[in-house]
Amino acid sequence: MKQTKILLIGAGGQLGSELTQGLWSIYGKDNVIASDIKEATGILQEGRYEKFDVMQRDKLFELIKKNDITQIYHLAALLSATGEKDPRWAWKLNMESLLFVLEAAHELKLYKVYWPSSIAAFGPTTPKTNTPQDTIMDPTTVYGITKLAGELWCEYYFRRYGVDVRSLRYPGLIGYKTPPGGGTTDYAVDIYFKAIREKKYECFLAADTYLPMMYMDDAVKATLDLMEAPAEKVKVRTSYNIGAMSFCPAQVASTIKKFIPDFSISYKPDFRQAIADSWPKSIDDSAARHDWGWQHQFGLEEMTKDILENLQQHPQYLA
Ligand code: SER
Image 1 (cartoon, rainbow, N blue to C red):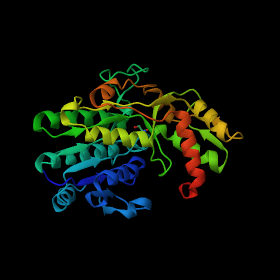
Image 2 (cartoon, rainbow, N blue to C red; image 1 turned 120 degrees about the vertical axis):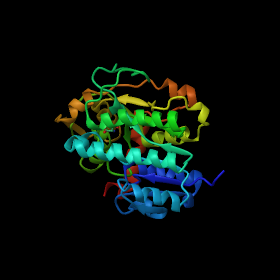
Image 3 (cartoon, rainbow, N blue to C red; image 1 turned 135 degrees about the vertical axis):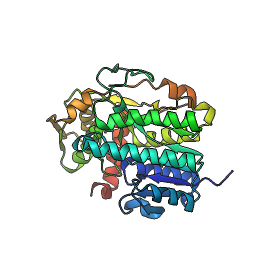
């Protein structure tokens, strides 16, 4: 068995930077190469890093060969709100980059690939509460369309070529260490920054818009748990539903008020409301719990306490 060597693409994003650190703690800094189209910033400067554009197929293949890469985590993508501003580009970037990674995994015989899907792969006629693993999928955003198509490509590469590709349908992910990157669920990140800086927040979704959400620590744990699971336990080869909590903006605001009593929220829904309304409100993730033992740790109150304490103690994240 070759030494595990990981290439993480999209390390500059919210999930990427935290997942890089999770991978460092398992495999050591020498065995993880973080990459993104931008120069390394913050904590990423402490490990191995390649500035690299995932749309350069040859460069991807060269990087893998040169570094004896055995696993890829491919996180680079345009998210739901940004994708709607340039649908053609979102399709090209999200789909072609996934195909390059799958082709590389097949041709260069990588051991494992991780690729994220999302609740955005569901749509308006999907059952909204406790959305099942197998159900109607009719995404309305180009981002969601790329996630649904991508899930099917992952399964295709697994069935046809035996590529061990694994995936999770993330809910909205909430972290405080990196600014959010153009998602519909990102109000739940922004709100904490504004709560500390300005004690008020204008929300782009309506007060009672319930969405499935997850704290970043749980998202990193879910990803690493799935990737560490024995292959025979990974029964779903499209993408696993994964959940932790479900809340609406009014509930985040009242939880923040417990810690910052003079915090106030106002609502001005924009085009992102229609996107949020097309997504599930909560997720049935029993397949992930059953197949490889998924368990979340953070609920809304624990998460809020943790984020506010950390932002107060480490003001560099507010800069
Ligand atoms: N959080 C993402 C978004 O809002 C969904 O995967 O775009």
